[in-house]
Every structure is written in C-alpha cells, then in structure tokens.
Image 1: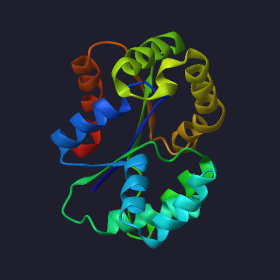
Image 2: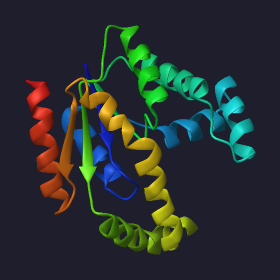
Image 3: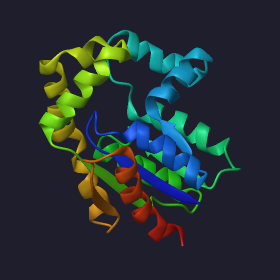
Image 4: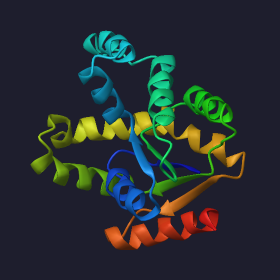
Length: 192
C-alpha cells in the first residue's frame, strides 16, 4: 500500500495534481479540509470537538486531526494507498502520522514537494480568486502571509522525511500535464 504526501505551498497545484494521481494510481486522496468538513457535517464525536476549536478561530489540536485520519484510513481497506494533501503541516503531525502508520506496519513511502516561485503562486491564487469565492484568494497581502506561514511552519516537514531519504523536490512550473508527468516519474519508482 502506497503512503504518499503531496507537498507544497498554497497555490502550488496540490489539489489539481492529487486528483489526477489518485485516479491513475488508485489512491485515496485525503485532504484535511475535506476530512474536517465530513466529520463536522456528520456530527461525529471528533467532528464536534474540532468544531469547538474552529468556531473560536483556533487550530484543531493534532490528536483530534490524527483521530479523524485514523478513522478514515481504517474504513478504507480497498484502495492501493493514500495521498495526503495538506497534512502533515508540522513535525509533531508528521511524527504522529508515522506512529499511526506504524500501527499497521506501514510508513510514508514518498513526499513530493511542488516547487513554485512566490510571485507565480501569488499570480495563480489571484487568478483562482476570480472564481473560487474565497475572499482570501483576492488579497495579495493575505496570500503572501499564507506563503510565509508555510515557509516558517510547514516546510520543515520536508526535512523530516528528507532525513529518511523520502523527500523530493518537483518543478511545479509548466502545464498541468508536464507537472503530472514529473510526479508520475517519481511515483513509478516506488510502485514497481
């Protein structure tokens, strides 16, 4: 079973590429945003706990997020593996994910990080903002702040897996198909 993290700053194309990769490799795409929405909509115990934090503008604690992830993974035994998108965001989350996977003798196989220059990311998100309906996608200052948060807090997860020889940088510039081919080349190495 493949355990794969698609990584990169906001606007780097993770969501677009994750959907294509999930289809090609029969992987289940796990987005923490989707996970939170599902758990809160279904009023699960963890979803209600998460909602308490989210309604106060606070980050959902790692143990709640990991609990949701564990529930989702345990209910999906008919897939070839998972693509994690938007998770882990911190080293403690990466360590918690590693422990969760170890419970079933699994481990992260690969982390692919889409590398895109900041000005290109801003351009992409502003363009997405024309149709996304998200006010934060239309404000360059907010976009740049989101990128800085990624650089300060999230990019260190790349190093966590690099120490294990599992992280790779992928050029995130080009057409959707060109980037997809680069990602597939790396995934094909572990799917053999």
